[in-house]
Length: 326
Image 1 (cartoon, rainbow, N blue to C red):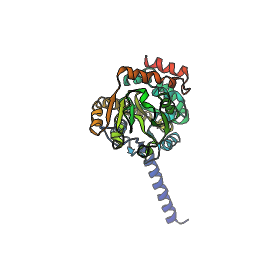
Image 2: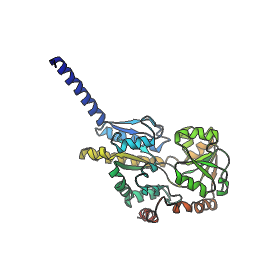
Image 3: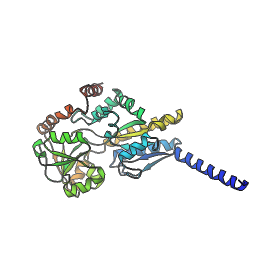
Image 4: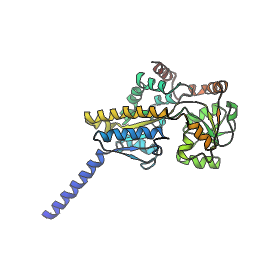
């Protein structure tokens, strides 16, 4: 090998090493919603987290929803250490441990304060991570994305459980299908990317979501009815690579932990700004039904099978109940 060739090879290798180091130093954050600080609590969390990292000397970049893959692909990348942080659905870590499904129990939590009490004072986030971190995934935070979830559909006003008959609702998974069936409706699993087409073609007639969703994702052209049923807190999670998290220096890990605290605080403060969303829905042509207490109780009573579905054991439900009362 000539000296010239050797030097060229050395320079190329050094360039690759520097590129790899720069890429490793950047904290990549995969978004799960449009970058809207007014309409997306998830983005408020991600933006605050990223800005805190950057203001403390860590490189961070957010990536548009779908740019790095779908939810399952992002989960795989995080667990393999290829992606540092992802804004994700609750059920993405349910494949490791089902404890997190306590956050989806219908009519279980009164408000977000009760959720936080269970997670942080009651130790449930620590318990969730005890199961997920050995598989390479850490739940950094639980994010509110809006008011408690309600029932959207394209067909008719839903003023009672009986009105759910004849509706086919988009479901996240089998457990949500079971909930719809307990209400007298049907469910079909549809990926979020396919929801607009499903609603327009009749594959699905509606979905269960917080009130901001049709506004943020442009669904008000075909969603015409919303029942403010207050079924469960509207939550997503932030997951992180455990390899990345444990590989940080003590100082950088403290910056990340502080960024999580700042993001949680900003996210909860954002929730307080969302009280006018129903008026925005009405302005967009969506008819709103507010359940009276008798109708709400009927939905609550009809949801009882969700507690006996086997998704969570009675012992796990009791743990959540004790934690929220901590």
